[in-house]
Length: 144
Image (tube, rainbow, N blue to C red; front, side, top):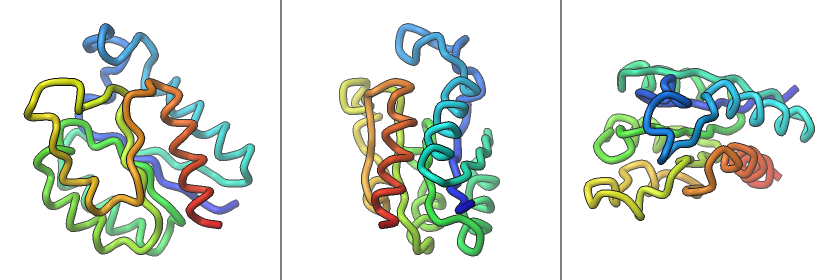
């Protein structure tokens, strides 16, 4: 199977517990399972990695250059100031989909700027867990 990488950033391991009024009651595992089953239906394998630090995310993106056909990334708060993630994604040749459960543009002003968006193929925001399914479809469509 062709592999797709899903990267989850800081604090996403707390989904289901942290601010359920914004992020819902589903866990990260729930969202990953949806992404995995969607990928499998489309003939792809999805591999998930979650990190609470920027350096590990950068290392994972570097390793993805020779391993994965596409990347779905929810960088969490690093979306807004993770320039090393921006640079690592800029060096990646496959499609990249930026993913957010909530809509950052409808939240606090500091969340309105994404340093990931300029190097992403596209962004999916505000669709809750359904965004994970949409993101996998977007990667697969970009690979065609």
